Amino acid sequence: TPQAVIFDLDGVVTDTAHLHFLAWRQIAREIDIDIDEQINEQLKGISRMDSLERILRYGGAEQRFSQHQKQILAERKNTLYVESLKQLNPDSVLPGIAALLAELHGANIPVGLASVSLNAPRILDALGLTHQFDYCADANLIKRSKPDPEIFLAACAGLGVQPENCIGIEDAQAGIAAINASGMLSVGIGLQLQDADLRLPSTASLSWPLLQTVKRN
Ligand code: BG6
Ligand code: MG
Image 1 (cartoon, rainbow, N blue to C red):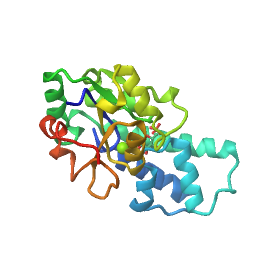
Image 2: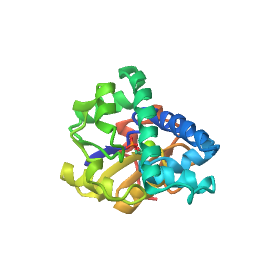
Image 3: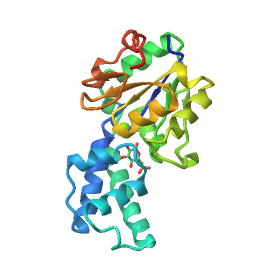
Image 4: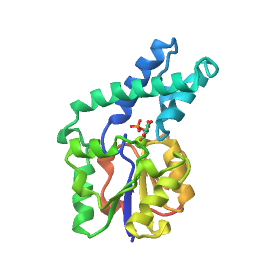
């Protein structure tokens, strides 16, 4: 049986993936770039500055802004995003997540968080979930965003478990790649995700009995 379960936050615990998109879309519009949900898929799991770089590349504008201007754009995006986080409350936890956390605690399975978002602590707080996680990897200490396995390895180390014995849950293609590179077992939320050891249509399908059946692909 798995010895720990490590969750991604944005798009797995709550639907902030959409709020990130809305904030980026507004910033992109202001610099005459139109982004859609498809490019947003590539921003999931990617750090704030890496996301901006991708949007600029997508809009053919990678040379248009100085480092300082990029810093300002990224900060403005975050201001918009943080403002939108005010709508979060305990009802914003995605279906099946609270029940899974309760099952894991009942079974004494350590629970970790592996989010590269610098806003993760305030989001968990708004959801009322801070105390449900035994260890949250600190995005401030991570040098490389997903698909690098760094954040998942940090979560395993913090929980004191070997990656081979852990399950990671992700909604992003970069996140599945990060989990697989860490040696953990991967569970993908979204049937379009490639290379996950298990794929589910939504978080509502998650349960501890199901996670115990996951095998390496
Ligand atoms: C990840 C999201 O969890 O956090 C990305 O999937 C986001 O979309 C990244 O860019 C960084 O988040 P933040 O809150 O630090 O800008
Ligand atoms: Mg995510």
